[in-house]
Picture 1 (cartoon, each protein chain N blue to C red):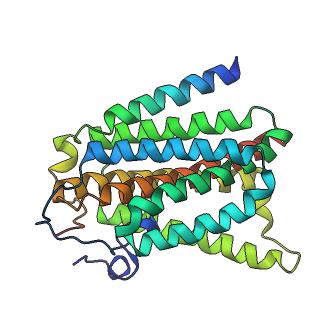
Picture 2: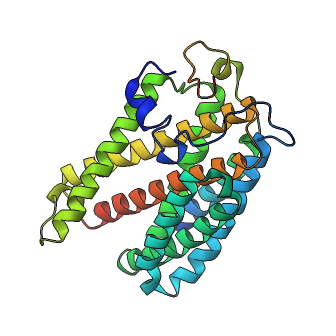
Length: 244
Length: 40
């Protein structure tokens, strides 16, 4: 039992994909979760995402339907992790379509922004993985609580902004290319990046605890959710900087 | 030239992730008392 009641109530990680709906029975018959399996499955999901992105690039009108379908599949995966061997690949392909379409729109305004965002996203992924594996960054309960709170704060802010948009209004600094807007985007990129550390820790601990094999897909799915978020925030940050 | 830099960065980072991700974390990371106990 965690000493933090908020963690007990809302989940174990800042990433909503890591809520406690999985089987923690350590005496699982058959194959168990491994680091290698999870990384291989993440590679498969990334390949599917790239495939979907090629499709979305040529059909930008599919962005909104893909985002909505991807969101529904993500929720289904979070609440039914046992189905993740089927839903995680579907999520990756659909999100790929959305990312391809969104990237095409940004590229038409700021040529080269897509490859810059991809490079920075993978750069952050590799550097944080190194920091995690070497023990430079050590996730603790307080670290998790901090990242979870900040993530929920950002989600709430985006939700309020979304509701306000129906009334022709918005929270100005979220979209502004001023110092406050860029500072906000930097903060969000930082929080999204630190969620990766919690993902790595979950996968490491899950493989040590011998979770069921399907949790490899779930771990890979969780990494994908964070990577998609990180990529979109980097894209927004670069667009803000280049529009100045 | 700038794009080439980001392409190399992405490819190299992905390679590092696919290799380093399969390696177990250091003792400094796994053997500590303040670790998050998700499954205990």
